[in-house]
Length: 153
Image (cartoon, rainbow, N blue to C red; front, side, top):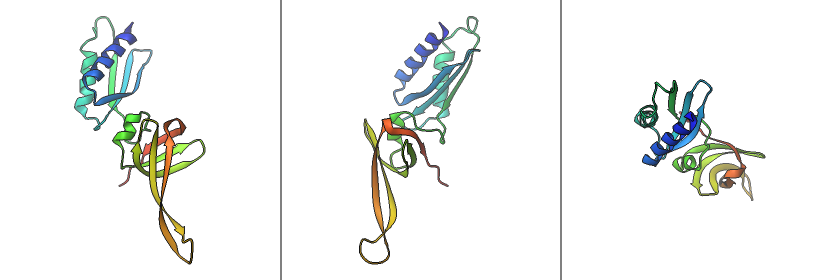
């Protein structure tokens, strides 16, 4: 079956390049293959070409008519893989859970959760004026509805 062949070729290519990982993979009815990858150190055009060739050069066009699109996860795409969190440590994230929304710097990404840190101005406990307080939240991957890197210019 066509999908099994493509899946096997994709898995073999990703095993050859352990710094790359799969974000999304689909095959539409007209045999349009769509693959989205990311990498521990980002994704270059050459990385997309490597994955594309690994698939394209191993499927007989006489037997299967198909189109193939390989792209990197966009800068504004939500984070969906734990490895994406690890590569974005020290970057600003917006994280939405079912009950709250957080904005802060990704300080840590473990196997089960992330740690976000941010600063807020709060009234002094005693006297007038405000002080800057460092806040922190540990958020389990299971609780994250959506997480995105905040792009700043």
